Image (cartoon, rainbow, N blue to C red; front, side, top):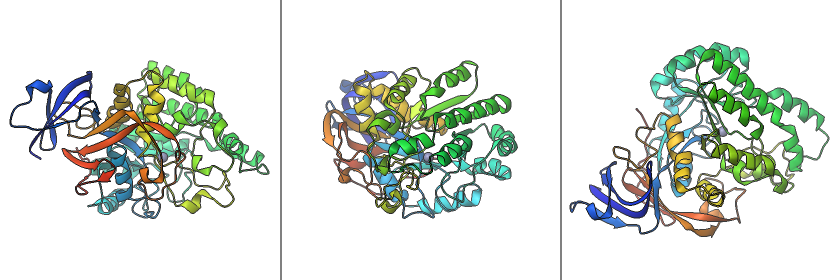
Length: 449
Ligand SMILES: [Zn+2]
């Protein structure tokens, strides 16, 4: 370690992409200089035309440990993250057991994570029925904010909340000044569509799509905007899938409401028309919608209505994807993509005229700001953690199971040819992933203020 200089003709800084040298002292970026100005006492590594970006930050990941480590775990999730160019993950308060709805559960998660992590991590707390008294203690204990579900989350130990539960919790949430992340789908439209579709063929993706209509998302977003106006808390809409909500979200922002929005690579890359029957690896909630909707989501990103892109990495054991009957109703919903998100996004973004500065903003700076780590992670800038990724934006590769690295190598992207290769990932000055292999030790730690 000590003093290191990393040179590239393409450094992605907040001011733009430039040739330069990243000067690193121990775990911290000391400065960015022209390649000719590197002080003699720095050791030097030249990456040529490979691009240096800030390490990616994913504020929406389900690590599932403790309690469901057979689905995923700190070691396997952070390994997949390092291979994908991520240097910090923020874990959701479910599907681990216990769910992170009180301080004792957060402590249990810390014990499970200890010594397991290839990259840094942090945790959201949960807002569930009746846990208002836990909200302030969770903030004091280091939770980055809160997550709630307006619809059944698919597991039993994390209860969904309705308007009455939210009214009980929101004064405490607002007081912490931390964000509330909301899974915005209402059960009403989903339940009535599902019962109407009961005798349909659930191997068809179209049946599943019809069971989770745009109205479920729209109704939930309207409810949350109304509560945001009343309680003045920081509202964050997770995994927006319907482009029909964009104008109302823009109007809310224009009105001055503190609302932010994320979407995921799968909503920006896949479309319902091309999902084959039985392809339950493509099931997630809200569902991947049509091609026209996908293009509107890209426009939402372009217009800044959607702030950033996270994976919602949510794996499960292979049997839960129902390979036997390929039934979309009963298969677990979740797409695991930590290792593939950056090439997926670059493949889609580059041919739409976006740059790696946009990728850095969507996949590092903005999610880091949501997690309250924006002053230390998410940028190549003086004083920031020396987290960075060496990315070859011009090469292509075809996705195989060897590229995935999470516990069960299930993915909708197998066999696809993607643009952009993660060559190396550095965590606080040290390489953790290099040319396809993991190097060094598991030195990832929890991000604390
Ligand atoms: Zn999620």
